[in-house]
Image (cartoon, rainbow, N blue to C red; front, side, top):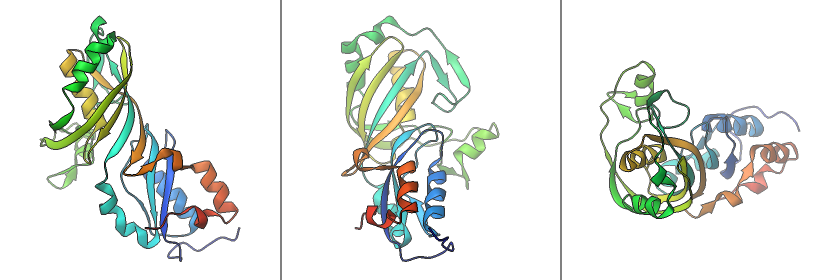
Length: 238
């Protein structure tokens, strides 16, 4: 495949990508830039590096749809681990508190009763390690310097939370939520409701609006399609 000069091409559309763990959303954007030679590439909703699942990549003039697509509701599969809280509210952070998990967390009925208390419109405090801007800087940038940012609770809506599995150490859930919802914060707050520190141990985004991760292409498949000149046919047009 001849090398395309990076810049503007005639490509225009949306790619649904199944992001693997260990790469950032920006890494995927950069991959698509290199594959296509198109400089105008973005995404509609970040996934943390450890998370997997559906990432919407926008190519060419479709990058202007970013704000519109950010408003879509989302569904996640998540594992909430009990016994440790962290400064990032996930397994990547430094430990803040530790405690033995409670035997009652292994009871499915107890788990469902706790989760039911989070369904509906709630006030949620974002994680300190988040991309929210406060006083001109990202919260995570301040947190990395050891500074505490005074964040403001956000109103979000939890449409449903389904319990998939419960043990004393962790709960597996499926959650459908509104824009702006942090599943890391949900894990932290569930731990507080249970009475045991908790963090988000695993996360996979399975849906954004009407799009499912089952429709997505892996980054390896994208590379193969680009090499064969078939990337254009994979793009969705709105």
